[in-house]
Image 1: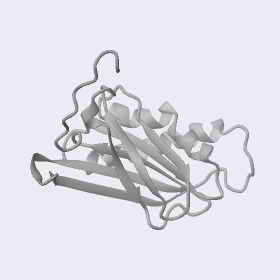
Image 2 (image 1 turned 120 degrees about the vertical axis):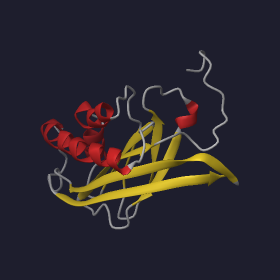
Image 3 (image 1 turned 45 degrees about the horizontal axis):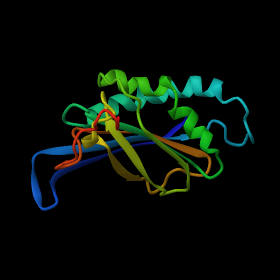
Length: 184
């Protein structure tokens, strides 16, 4: 795995809708900009061998960075992948959608739900919204939120940006009722 760049972004939210929060909510994104391991190979039918090698390395690299970036327990999380213009969206999807990647964060925060994801193809500075859900109950509406991210110089055409995001709480001043059993 060839890592060109590691990125950490942290937000602290103290006020929303002209109202102070009782305690700040922190959101963070950690990402690795890596060389696309399939670049220059044309269409690759079997992505599995590279996924089995690279995805666990990415998970082991990023999960502790996310936990360390936040000052309190992670309550919501998500993941993201942006493949450069010379790649295939499946390249990012393959690295994201495997337990070999996601279990690193799930284990680190005692989570049980699947990580929601966004993946797309784009150029340098592509804006993407990382969806976040509660770490143990995906039906907790207060934690359904997104974190907008943009890395100005990534991904280059033959790179992939893979990242994890987390939050120490739900949306500020969340007021939606819990899901009813027929909605869950």
